Length: 257
Image 1 (cartoon, rainbow, N blue to C red):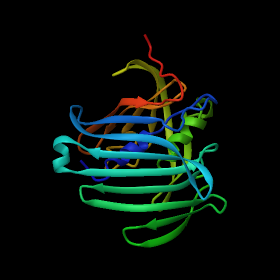
Image 2: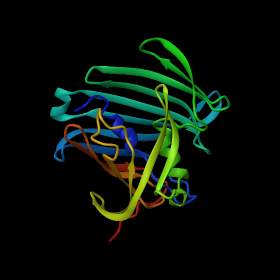
Image 3: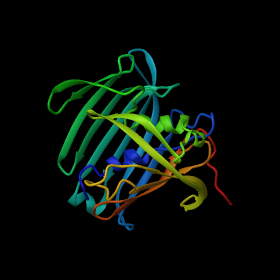
């Protein structure tokens, strides 16, 4: 498996919201099982959301933690932590943390966002360097985009290609993330039959993914809009991520009978 494989998780946490109902709250917790090539348990990831403050500003604080487990952990040890502090009402990112160790490849950065100036200050704690970058209007980080899309994006916002897009800033680059809506369908899960939106984020191919359409995701079509399954074709093998457990959802989790 390639370095940065857990970056797939960050693309995994995307969804489409068609209502004004609040889809998440402090205390929400999600756990995912990661499988490689359809059968080998490769790892697990958790996503938690709490209340926090920075400089007296009330913020949500989300933490995404991913790690390899079992036999794969002996061959390619991964310990990744991504954190985002973002404003409660408009989901505007304030601070982002990326601290990863993937098979010996390490990165530890903190990004402070200044949306009034459309700037981001990247503090590379490993190289002890500090740099400023221009960002696109209302740019999201890799974690806040998960919540931004859950709350704001609607199927009604799709263009004539059934796509939506959102500005992101990652490490030192601006990125326009495009997501294609495929269809709405009922899928079998560990919890029963769930009505889901099937979507496809476009990814950069060549290093990890086979092509730009290698990633497919299913998001619950209830008021929570949580990712429940993902499949991805990699340069070597494939990966599948499934929701394993959850707690403290804002809305009821709807199962089809």
